[in-house]
Amino acid sequence: MSTGLREFLEIPYDELEELNLAAKQQRLDRVAADVIAEARMKYLADEKRIKAVTVCFSDLEGRLHMLDYDKKFLLKSADNLTFDGSSIRGFSAQSESDLRLEIDWAAFYWLPSDVFGAGKVLVFADVREKDGTPYAADMRARLKDFAAQLYKKDGLTINAANEIEGFLFKGRDAERHYRETGRFDFISEGGYYNSLPGDALRLFIDRAAEVQRAMGFQNEKDHPEVAPSQFEMNYSYSEVCIGADQVQLYKLLSRQVAAQMDMTASFLPKPVTGVNGNGMHTNLSVSKKGKNTFFDKKGRDGLSASGWEFINRILTSANDICLVLNASVNSYRRLDPHYEAPNQIKASAVDRGSMVRIPIGNEKSARVEVRSIAPDANPYMALYTIVRTGLEGPNSVADTDKRPRTRTLPDNIYDAIRNFKQSKYSANLLGADVAEKYAALKQMSADRCPKALGSQVKTAEIQFHHEVTNQFLWSQF
Image 1 (cartoon, rainbow, N blue to C red):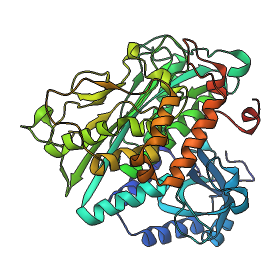
Image 2: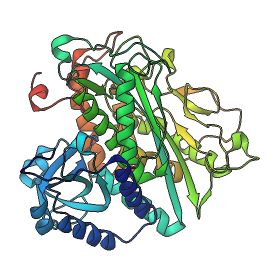
Image 3: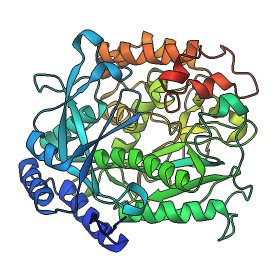
Image 4: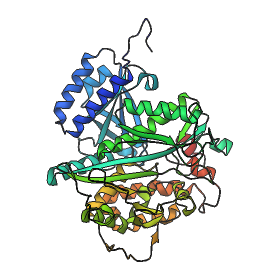
């Protein structure tokens, strides 16, 4: 905050929303990258009250990494930002560790100073090889490039909106202390839609939703969820790359707000036995020249033939891609049919146990909802996988009301790893090298955990979870 010695940038929330929505619109309008870069760098040079720029990228498992660069240094060195890739799980080997960051100036965010600190802005970056070529394990760049090719070739825009559930627990860093306590303590036991205006869960939701609005999320509704101390804050759909960035920001701002309130926002898929888990229902549609190609008023469940083909391709490859959508040992606890689990490889307009649901929609809102995704999945990898599979994957599912006997998704990570490693489709989709690295990471985590889940959450599946563990915890094996 400002003192007599410092004057750092602090922008009111209503002005933040205007700035971030304008930047978002530039991305939607596909304003040329060099035009945006020039404008952003000029802004940083002129705005003396900004001290640092937070540059973000995600690793192969989807964990968000942040580096704060001094603004003056960044402006001089934006074309030569390097980091040690061998320090990032699943990135480069020690002998070939140097990687570069290429700032995506269009993905620029002004931040609420009371949550992130005064005098800072945030921007996403893509990871590059030393020679500047795309780094294969950077799924954000893969998703962005694929979406750009679809638009350039066929004029297609992929729209995405994620419904991200989380738990609010007492105490800071509750996940990292789980190995000491063996439990999570609910902050509230009010239940679905039932939380009084002044209780801790509602205060957290209110504050986090304010931060979302200020960052241009275009909120729709927020509420407690089915399980005790569970929350969900919904926002409008956007272009798929923006949508993936917003998943990372959603979790980041939730964790930050919770920590300021001496609590923990957790996105573990199933942190507590006996209550519903956390999902990340992912709504997708494809538009061309502003028209929703998934809508057909006369089609089955209001979907067009292309919408049903999109679904059938996903169902065909469901077991091949399950490890991407359910990326941890703990996520297979959530795929329990006793808790509205979407573990059935089928599509339905009504059955919430289906992997894919067709929500009620109209010409604007018709969409496909993939329900089996857990919130700890790498959002870039998950969206890239679903979109490319839905548009280009094999299709062996008959588009009829009378389908074969329903299959189910794996109920443990070992089967999911085996399916993934044996899948030629997954190897072609991600590239053999990236698929091998990803499977190896998942295997290492699984090997640190009990081979049978059992009825109770085990310490190891929390301690070695990719969003929780660190070098110290990883070595406690």
